[in-house]
Length: 282
Image 1 (cartoon, rainbow, N blue to C red):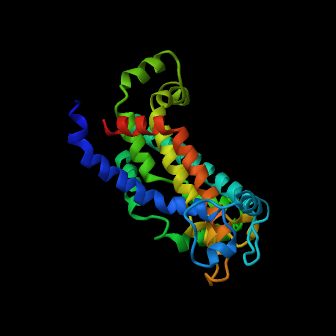
Image 2 (cartoon, helix red, strand yellow):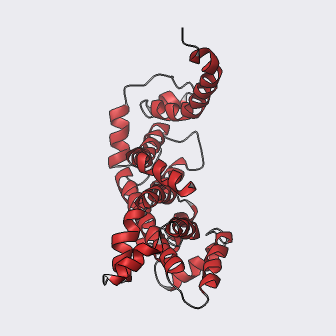
Image 3 (cartoon, rainbow, N blue to C red):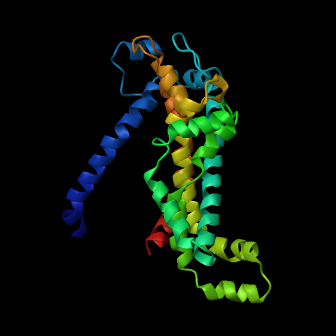
């Protein structure tokens, strides 16, 4: 008889219990999206799926409105969220790579001063500087635009610090050899630095995509038109003020679709995410 099961059964029970507790709200959201509003409104929502899944998802995707809820179609909100998340992730990675590349491989006056200046910005998240950020975006006329929605969220001291640590592990002899062969700074970055830092780039992309997808405060402040709503803002607007006057089935269907994209990205890049985090720790 193998002895592994008796030794580890308690750990497996605790893990399964934890997974069940975390997954139960998600399961209830999925089940709720398959019933009609009257069934949920009675306060006795079944624990098994209902027959209205296709209607609820089609209604939320195409119209976003029900008997008591008037919202933006989910397809528009998800497109806005996707464009926002992908732009923030790519923009942050590009800015962070260039900043870390300059700090690690170039010698210029006040180099460490600028590095510590970037480091200090960790203490100034967007929530702290939100009023001056809004003033700047307003003065440039970027309210209700994707530029205003994404540019203030593109600068990341965390990403710069991550890539700095990765670049410090790259032997400088590689770049010296490339320079002897006639490669310029951008050629060295593209052909040597980026391929070696690919796992870290992929890991940071996953984290930043989820970060951009879940943004709430800045989109709520910078957008006033319905066609600019992100999916997180759309769900909050659908909730309204009175829980009794709500199409919970559409809210649940919208919530499930909002969760699907980040989950798909994490599953798709899971191998690179783990590899990037492990190599960064080394």
